[in-house]
Image 1 (cartoon, one colour):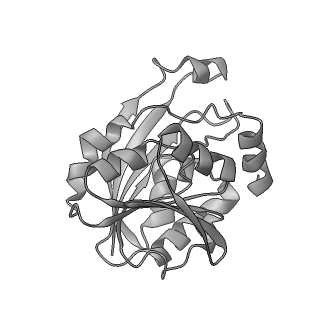
Image 2: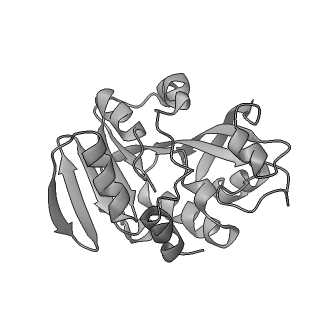
Length: 218
């Protein structure tokens, strides 16, 4: 499952993973990160998520990255935002006020790109990664962040074999294995979310939890 899979999903508007509203976990847990409102927040694999608007409304400068140009353009157009476009290394940079949205590969982001980032909101990035990419993803996130930086991570767990991702099931044990060499990992809450998710029931799931983690770069 590589870049062509996601580009094709956006091209064909197969985006059942997109959430039209802000993540409720931002209201519930963002303050627990205790990051200054003036800090820059990184949103990886952002799609056209409105979560970036929530973060800018909180006073943060937001730095997003997304592979699909369709998604990036849709984010600005659907939210009525004017923006400028410029080539920035391997990425196409779209800028609107306090938001910079790069179109390109997450793995091409460098520590120089994220030198002002002090927090990350990962609602749908880790769970989009198949197993063979997760170690690389977590290690690269560790390379991008400086000591004391925080990640609010939303992961998902469901019974093995009941559904093929994405989104993928990533257990607490795996989250800890992926991140604990670079981050302190704190599980904040486990939420049973299947009852209100008919789409996932239709895909065959008999149970599904979302887990909220606070990660702090060592």
